[in-house]
Image (cartoon, rainbow, N blue to C red; front, side, top):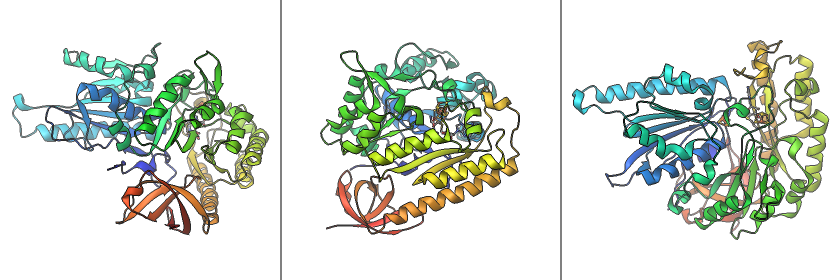
Length: 488
Ligand code: SAH
Ligand code: SF4
Ligand code: F3S
């Protein structure tokens, strides 16, 4: 039976400004009755890259005898896979560590000293990378801290603890490639994660937008080789995956090498992936407007497996703010890219990210952003109040915006984006769309799937349809999702 984590549909919604807040996703594969297995609980915060990393950490720990459980209480090891993008996301980690400390104290209270136990507590991800030593200092409950480029060293780090080392801290950017050193996922583990899978093809970022921590937490831009990606994609498909979302913080800056040593762009990689039989849908995220080359744009016209959906953050509609953000594109160049995409694929669904209240943002700058949104029209989008991040250039800029003003602007902007989302969804009512069924719905006999435009759709259909793509007539729009009926 295909079992998909309950938060499966939330992973696109890493947003404090959306109802579901910052994503939290657990690797949920119930432990079997084998008592020799150690129990691993991983809680994931942040972006899809972290979701992917969590899966790869599970894969790296499986040969060490660890199996995933979905609560921390019984776990032998707890990993918090963290996000540093905004202050709120980072602070969450310290409250979670406080909860862990209390959970351990409560469990140990009735026990004699000799019986007391403690799971290994590890902090991974972008907060670990950015403030590893601070975590060790503030939270003595933590045994291990390691950054996003060190996951392949997990067995080695565990070995150090087993040998009696008290704490392990690894926040280097190692010269070896973590992907090449990580073990392949087992087919059963792959399919337990769902028929739509993530695959990181590119890591890090060299763009240094002035608000953003990613270049510091993930390191320099790096592209995996074509051969490795094709091999991983084939393994996913062999296990039953039908849709792959290629991941990177700058996914369309991808420039991996093929076997002959030639550099291949994302468009070239998409074309190579298209040859994999039964890989029906390919998506990619997150793209930068400056890296949308014409080869990639044309793929949306010529390649059926390239889904008509594009997440293309613009952040602001004001050229003054875009320059202060060091985005290296203008409002006009963004619109020009969108026009070229719409020419290639008129029905493309567009998504974006917006930052409100960046230092120096005037009413006129905000109006420019509202105006851009009205011009482009989005099928969905994420919006954030600017959060000053330590070490970034914008954190010390003049003209920091009053929180009340930023909140008001954010509210206004979200109203517009919500209206556009509703309108986009409404426009699909009455149409017949191919739906990839992904998991069981809340009600008996119901499945949830995704349209090509990434809209969740509820349909009455047998469970055996999970993993299949079928034409569905879209009937109505509820609060969160569309409802449809199978054509026959
Ligand atoms: N690499 C992607 C996304 C980076 S992080 C890109 O270039 O678009 C995801 C989103 O978080 C960003 O697009 C931005 O909208 C938001 N973000 C990043 N840093 C932020 C900050 N300091 N405050 C508020 N939002 C931020
Ligand atoms: Fe951050 Fe900018 Fe790089 Fe995106 S392109 S990850 S926003 S620095
Ligand atoms: Fe957060 Fe790191 Fe992703 S800071 S958004 S988890 S790259």
